[in-house]
Length: 305
Length: 264
Ligand SMILES: Cc1cc2nc3c(=O)[nH]c(=O)nc-3n(C[C@H](O)[C@H](O)[C@H](O)COP(=O)(O)OP(=O)(O)OC[C@H]3O[C@@H](n4cnc5c(N)ncnc54)[C@H](O)[C@@H]3O)c2cc1C
Ligand SMILES: Cc1cc2nc3c(=O)[nH]c(=O)nc-3n(C[C@H](O)[C@H](O)[C@H](O)COP(=O)(O)O)c2cc1C
Ligand code: FES
Image (cartoon, rainbow over all chains, first blue to last red; front, side, top):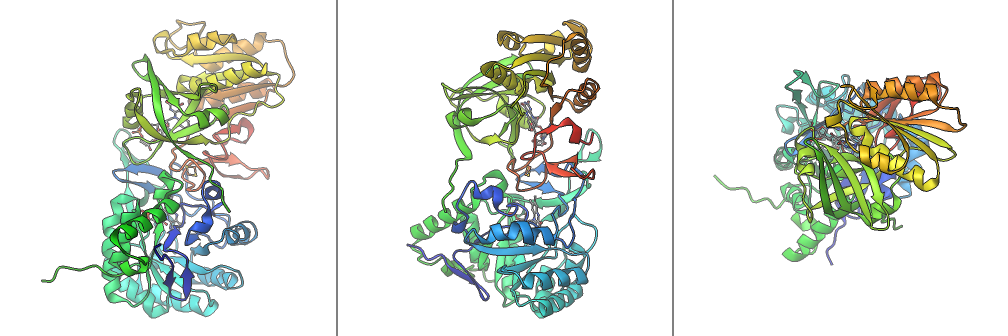
């Protein structure tokens, strides 16, 4: 038997596998195909205060070892989520993390204030969506804004606040330190990398929004590097995301310093990816003689020079 | 709570039949899909590329547990699928999506263009099983590019084949052939037009159906990733009940929509 339970700050998870935001809906479709109570938790699709229609299609372009998406935070808005989706998510027997995005500090604050009164386990601040013009990645690319946003949001809620950062910055360490100063409870690394796909025949971008966010195995090395780098700089728990396709990938993130991991694009290829990856992790641990998945955390042995 | 309902199937290719230089029919040993698939539904197939490829179900042989797919080669993924050989294995998600609604219909007219004739063949197959009167209009560029003509004729439905090149029953598009058919056809209550093919063709077919006050269902295509409704990349613009336009998911809200709600 391998112990799988992990702590992310004050939040106890039965295992380190979370479904990432935007690739699991609100769990409804996925519940048809797997027992969601086996997961550590589910991050909701990114929510905004008011409903958002999202970007014009096409919204996906295939790339080598990954994909670009330009969904643009299509979501029913916080009210409809609280009424129609949260009760369902809550019943699934795993942690519920709500991913929120705002145009402004006020919007983030209002959403966190409303969520404080609900049975969600944590709030994941999306400071990193590359597909919307206002807020979000703009705030998440500026250390001062990250710090001040998190500080204000923390006044509105007692829920754990996770800062999900964008890799589209010069220094991820500076952003992570800012999140720590602002009072974040955990840091989630990484969201998608901004990219472009071109149809050479028409000389047009494939995506209706021109650019999109790159995800999948193509970004795993970037995500691993950022987790390893940030783990040396901050004292907060880290959650690793980016290109995790199997149990070995997941364990690499734990070794780099993550306390938990999120599975995104893999769920789009294999609907049961989250539960499969958890099984693979425990099987690998067993084969390695590791009795507790938490033992892997932060055990990266850098070469000295 | 356990809810393990198999969605991913590892299936073996039973046979592959080349129809012409661009199109191939693949027969898969997929009993669970064959048992539950409805016309208009699709499967999402693994290939050597990162994303799966969505392909409509062309026919099922329920007793043998076989599923037939008609594949038109347009790029690397479809080329690779068309080159699969008997014994090859692939991972398939399905059956997926909301298909055509045949309940309560007494007569069905299918109008297919290009590779749209594949999924409509399944409609014809089911109409025959259920004793629904069915007519098929199929449009091609030319007789050389025409596909499934013998198969449609073999189902015993009334057929009308159109070719832009003028070398089949009707010279022109599938919508031209539909118009000819509707002019001559005695009205039968509970008739519907079901269409699949290039978007301009479906738009013309939907407009004609409207002129003749016939309900019309269209099968839309959009680039997909998951095929199961979780990623929202397959957005199609539709008119909602309140008259406003919004996006719905092609993969689970469709791919078949009432023509009335589609924003062309
Ligand atoms: C619901 C549905 C049913 C379909 N049924 C059939 C069928 O029965 N027979 C058939 O031959 N084709 C069908 N298609 C179209 C088929 O999915 C595309 O031709 C195929 O994905 C192209 O892949 P490729 O690698 O050859 O082309 P590429 O252009 O190299 O593909 C690049 C990317 O674009 C996507 N893409 C390209 N064209 C389309 C398209 N027209 N629709 C959706 N995604 C596309 C691919 O999936 C891939 O992700 C269907 C599509 C949908 C959405
Ligand atoms: C289709 C799609 C939609 C996404 N939507 C969101 C979102 O709403 N909020 C968010 O914080 N991240 C979103 N993401 C980013 C993922 O949660 C994840 O951070 C990223 O894809 C990297 O992980 P992966 O390579 O495992 O997919 C989305 C990703 C994809 C592919
Ligand atoms: S393809 Fe993912 S929601 Fe339709």
